[in-house]
Length: 246
Image 1 (cartoon, rainbow, N blue to C red):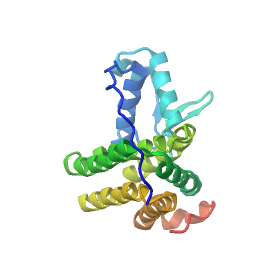
Image 2 (spheres, rainbow, N blue to C red):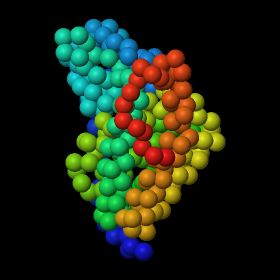
Image 3 (cartoon, rainbow, N blue to C red):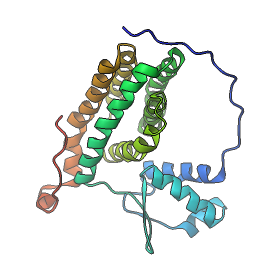
Image 4 (cartoon, helix red, strand yellow):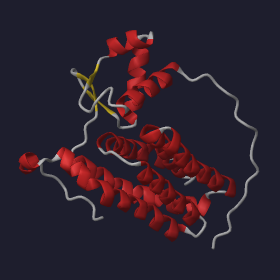
C-alpha cells in the first residue's frame, strides 16, 4: 500500500469579494439546474442585465464562464443558448471523461498528500449531508466539487480545464433529466467514498474505483436518458457513436 505523504498546511486564505461575473454566472447556473432556464432556451443578455442590475459586459463575461463549463453555447450572430445534449454528445463526452478522469485518479493516487485525501473524503461526506438537507440540486453541487478537487490534486494543472467542460454538462444533464431518490443519492455518495479510499491503494485501484463509479451511472440512468431523448417515434432520426459499454 502506498504511503501517503504529508504536507504542512499553509495559512488560511483570506476572504475575498466574489467578482460580479462570477456571481452572475452562479445565479444563471442555478437557474439552469432548476430548469428556470431549460435546455435549448435562449439567454438574453439585456434581460439578465436588468434582472441583476449589472451592465451587459458583466453578463457577457458571466456567459463566457458558463461556456467554458460547457453549460451554454454561443452561436455567432444569433445568441447564447442553454446547452442541449443528444445521444452522440453523451457518448462522446463519456469517452473523454473515462480516459482523462481515470488518469486524474491515477495521478492523485501517486501525488496527493494525506491532507488532500482527507479534504476529498470530507467532500464525499458533504455529498451525503447535502443529499439529506438540500436534495438533488445541493447534491449536484457537492458532486461537482468532489470531482473538481480530485482533478486538482492530480497535480496536472491541465486536467481541470479539460475535464470541467466535459463533466459539468454531463452531470447537469443527468440531474436535469433524471429523478433520483434519496437512497440513490446516498449510494452515490458511498461510491465516491470508495474512490477516496482507493487512492491510498495505488494508481490501478484508484482508476478502477473511478471507472466503476462511472459505469454505475451508465447502468442506472442511461436507460432513463434514452427514454427521454429518444422516444420510440424519434429513434430512427438520431444516429451517432455507440455508448461506452456499461
